[in-house]
Length: 235
Image (cartoon, rainbow, N blue to C red):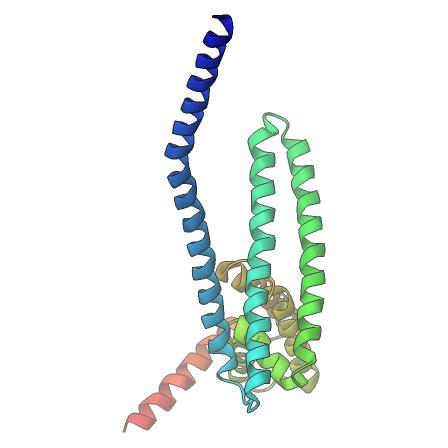
């Protein structure tokens, strides 16, 4: 009798477990399908983003073109993964920090240091991959594509605003813009990419002001020149 009761309890337990699996399985399957769909969608987005960059480049070899596209797309995905992991770690630290803000700040700084090291390693590998397929001018085209063309646009703007820049000043401006681009390439968002350029443009402006340029006056004069040229062309 005792064994019979135990068998009945066991059967009831197994039946309950079976019912739970029947209920939970579709939900788990749906969750897994959603994650897979999102991953596939993101792969498509990064491929399209990379295509827009590579399509503007003069690469006649289709196999090479595809390889470069894949390098760029994978770089976007790898960068996203590093930044997402960083944000998740920081969020966890802040959630458990309580009143110990100093310890939390120290831990966040450590996370950022680790993240920057990971980004630097990824950056080096990415550039090496590009250089295996492209010349330096083409590598720069990829870099500009990933940073919205801010370097050539900004450099052209400085030349137009300050036509009397010396060769030394032009070289320094370009050097800082290129340095900003190296950082901006690895940033996790459009806002942060532009933030890097903003930081370096501040450095450039201070440099030019120290050299005696009145940037506000120069900017106003530049706008006036542009307006006069547009009016002359419209006549």
